[in-house]
Length: 200
Image (cartoon, rainbow, N blue to C red; front, side, top):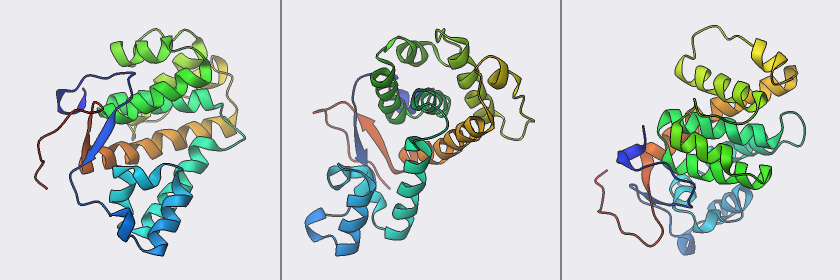
């Protein structure tokens, strides 16, 4: 289910905050520092400018997220992105799904699996047994976090070792959080379109 009835898309989206954002020209030195630490474009992002009201929380959030998604060892970046996409689809986060679909397509040099997942959901044909096992695990953990996990497919079909499986669990867990922040604090929109003011 997409948020607010908006369809999932591979197109780039923008995001409007429903809460007051920090004016970067009036931000404190601490706020500027944590924005610069978080992401190169954070100072122009309504999402980061909403989160930077709490400098400590944003700093920890960004460090954790960056460690999970961009760690140089362990799970392949393409697997991290397809897992993030699958989780975001289940949670109805159109913005996150768009971002991670495009990142997967860039890394894999193939938009097909991401587009299939966006259009048909997590049961889509993803092209390889490895992607299927990663996506299935991500969906299962998202939908049924208390159910015992079967790691057989991850080990046999995807060939993942223990470190890679732990990385995958971290991706699923951080998107349970990231999706809910996005869905709670604002909404996606197409570039250059307008949205009605949203009450908080």
